[in-house]
Image 1 (spheres, rainbow, N blue to C red):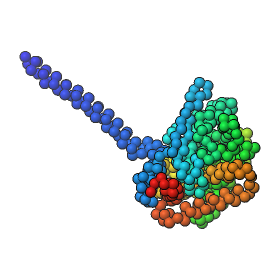
Image 2: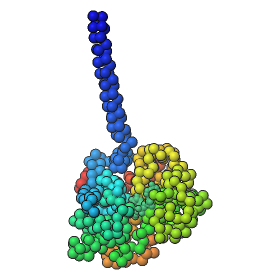
Image 3: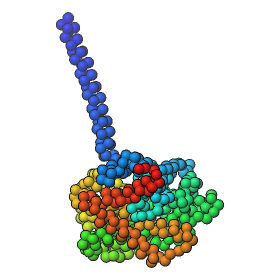
Image 4: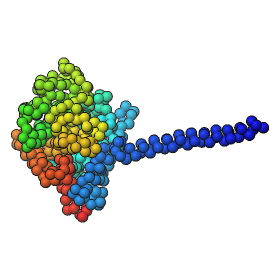
Length: 451
Ligand code: NAD
């Protein structure tokens, strides 16, 4: 009896305890889930395009963009997707024309395993802003294939390039959308794409693609144009802020097309390049590196770790106490997590989107001058424009004349951004975005697409 009376409350107690423990686990799980969702919305996992939306939203108040105009600015005009098949495996391929109010689409094609729709959309958006900022008669576009070209033979790389054109040829054309090289694509890839397009269309049309070899209508200046342009913009600003190139130290992240030419042009102007890096590591010399010697030694090699030099951790480069840090590799290198560790005084954004919107806030607070990508790396597309004009006219200009023109366009755009009245209260990126978005919106209004 005594046992019977005593067991009932114990059983009830155990049942209650089980329910409590179970409920606690469920609540804990839901809380964790909510935290993750909350964190995502707060931007910890913000996608590259969400960063763009945030930047535009910040700008909405500053230059009075209406809701109708925001919708036009944030919606891509055309999004094309397809699959490329190599050795029985499929790879995603994209072409996105973001905005074409100012002219035909213009932007590179990237081959990289991390290529995805969000990234291509962001790159196309930045191309629209860049072309507008420097006054070119182009909209913005970008393309890519989610493949690692380093794993491919030359024949397979040609196959990828030709399949890409077979997928999207109807979209391309000298007055529709004009592609160019980007990460892991070069003049040879452009040549294969041109050839495929011309075979399908049964006609010659050099001006449908830029960044081609000289023999196929390319422009001599194009290969080094993005690096050369970055050096022109930096030199302009260094002089404006009363500094001397010979006393200015530089660290360059990424030593591919853009980073290596930037190093060459800055070195020739007298800047002291103390660190360069690529995917394999960093080369550092406090008294300044001899860039010509490094480029000469790299001629028959691919990576910095193949040189007879001491190789350090490439992550260290971002935090060196230099005057100028030039991220020239990929997007999202300076983020909310590491921005506080950056000790450079100036950031020269050679890559597209190397800084996130949250990192911008930290860099501004730390008085670091960020010279934005849409201005700094526009040299490449400006020379692509020269190539396009030459091909359309069936004529060639002297290289010296083109160099003078490149310098003029870039100095004008740099002066417009640096001397604008918005700069009294806002960072250079905000000013550059305001100028380029106003030009796109003026075109949209004239076309009757918005008020
Ligand atoms: P690339 O493939 O020639 O070079 C990229 C370089 O970055 C390589 O040296 C690679 O090893 C290095 N790299 C990659 N990850 C790295 C890391 N974590 N640390 C250090 N180095 C790293 O590409 P590119 O054409 O020079 O383009 C670089 C950037 O410039 C991209 O953001 C591209 O969109 C932008 N861009 C290129 C052009 C152009 O004309 N090529 C024009 C405008 C903007």
